[in-house]
Length: 580
Ligand code: ISL
Image (cartoon, rainbow, N blue to C red; front, side):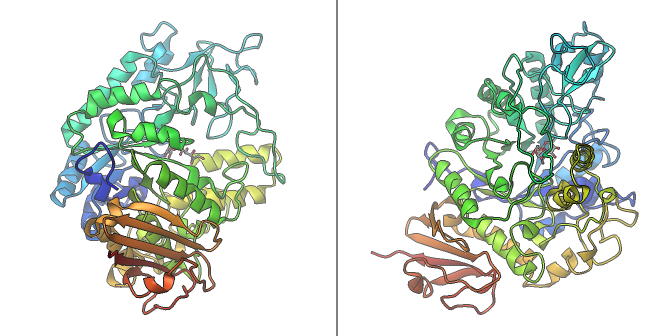
């Protein structure tokens, strides 16, 4: 069904976005860190894959406390990654190949080294004091002492969300690291400065924005204490367990829709036909997402929601539960339904914050190739805009991190330190990091079997996964049966088969613990996807499946398979035209 309120479906309904994490993609100068010239050098590969949009994780000047999500200048390029001229070249080269460039917009916070914060911190009378969240200590406490923070909120990267500034005797808010102070969006000057900066990027030729934790920019006033979780499971102390949950006060806060509508009016209006905006929104509900993405409301085109990447989590992200396929289907199915009439889904398994999906929901051993293809098939056949994270199209896996020293990510490093300090068993904490740590996504892109995986000729900033000798782009491109070519076909299918992009969605077999099955329908075309999420054969209990076996097999991942039973990790997409 074509979304209501729209005569022509938006261009991004038939598009696929590819995310590049520049630090880990391709290093052109041998310093061990990926860079912009490296990305430009690999555009032909991306063109062959067939993607429409490239989302570039932050390349701005940054102290790199959180790998560039701590920005000290919004309008330049960090020398680590190159120059503005290199970025212009990347944009031009991408455009020549019909690939759009979407920039990461990180405006919930800046770096503490951004001149705005340096100025804000310099004095309580600074004209920029109010650009950030400065608050006095909790009444009746001694400023700087534990527990004197203005609220009990924990930061996402362990420890309190408030940092004491001795010079002024006040605290500033940082939902992430202490080097990422939160901007105060209540202040109209802040909003104007951000809008101006965004327009500057559009003038430079970029095609849109992926908006980092954008549903956190509006905070409920005054900031108050959050609930303190009590559960501590089996000796694993969840990050933030000793802190309160500030989420209810800053997730989709009171002015969020106003701020996004204003941003749209100030920056995007008039360019809707060519731009893409996607809001990253931890904790967003379907009801909120409907409002954010309803085209009539002019806020954002789509959001990244987090529900389906939480189905294997217990009390915290480090407390990993086995996947229940029924829970995954229930969640994704509800989102499909919720955004069917107005609004739009984004579809993703992976990004730079998530472990590798083939290790998480698939089988990264015996059935790596097949299960990677299955996961791609299931995701890409949903309704929404699919995002492919670098290396996903090769079936890249989690990394065999041996010790805590192998991790680089501030979230993992801080969590390990604080959990162990609080008495958790280091082996269990390490086990959590291995399974859920963000560095799993950040090991270098595997281009070939050479010692640096074709990523670098130098020493990589984080270890290369030793399986690059087998899992790499060179091998995959040369093999027509590879995960790469399967993704290429999926991307092509979205363009050639309108039912993939625009068909309505019906989940089937909701209670089946092993088979994921759903229908897509557009006009008289019907597509059935069936996928066996297990290492044993399974029969899809889809009513009338025998008749489907007579229909066209659009795509599969097991050569020559045709019977009523699916092999281990087999996925099929059938197509038929309804008659009568
Ligand atoms: O992975 C997470 C921590 O458990 C997420 O909560 C993550 O921090 C959240 O998805 C927000 O992510 C974005 O903002 C962060 C940055 O570290 C992430 O890389 C970015 O994607 C702060 O800018």
